Image 1 (cartoon, protein in one colour):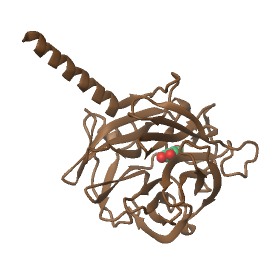
Image 2 (cartoon, rainbow, N blue to C red; image 1 turned 45 degrees about the vertical axis):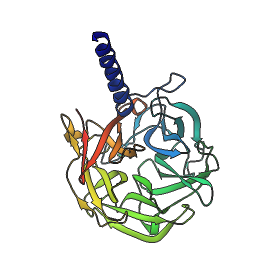
Image 3 (cartoon, rainbow, N blue to C red; image 1 turned 30 degrees about the horizontal axis):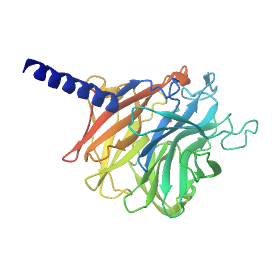
Image 4 (cartoon, protein in one colour; image 1 turned 180 degrees about the horizontal axis):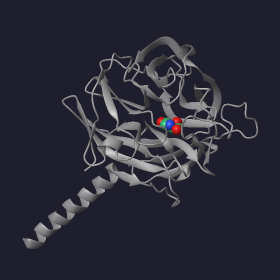
Length: 326
Ligand code: DGJ
């Protein structure tokens, strides 16, 4: 009897720790080769039973761009990496999904420039995997969204072009694919003062004329949009460069808004700095409605390749979003 109880206790303990590892990451993730996962500002594509993680490759020396009003720390744009996983715990390195170009500073994805926050969605009509990303000059004056495609989820991706959606600036961004197959680009615009949401064309390769201005004059960035119980939730950060600040969330009945703003979803010690991190993506947990993984970056501005990650359970309960730091 005692040993049966012990057995049950041991199994419960094991399950508890397995679930914790699955849902929580603070620090670095390690891939199948024993290397730290190099995928910052990441997003996840779930496709045919596999999770594909895409993110910025940050390697090389960090330097400070002179003459800026803010701490513009940079590393060479290393392109976009891809990792795959069946269980969100074990990550296989798939390689460089989008390679940067070298030696021509006029090219969007040259190593001398900025490639940030890549996000991939699959277009079932064209059978193409479409990657959107923020491309910029090192002083962030270019402010465009770049697009690349591939016929295989892990790439390699072919860079097509960049755009200013409807003539508007586009910096920090994400992409959201709705259940009806429509996809949207969400980006910090208008000198980061206001965000915009733009419906993408049916092939996901271009912005349409349908767009809305949201979180007007709120100075938000790092958008992560997700859907729960038929509502659309948008987590964002404030604009403080690489330094962490408090996240907030907003809720709407349509991806285009209007959005009603709420406070900080984070709870527990460190909530006022999003636990020293900045949002990048919210991943739905399959078969667990209302349960998500909040994915964020813990930037190390003086040595950007040493930035790591924070993944925490996120819950939506009766319309209220919580990210529990405990
Ligand atoms: C905050 C943004 O969210 C990051 O993606 C990056 O652009 C840094 N600012 C640059 O300071």
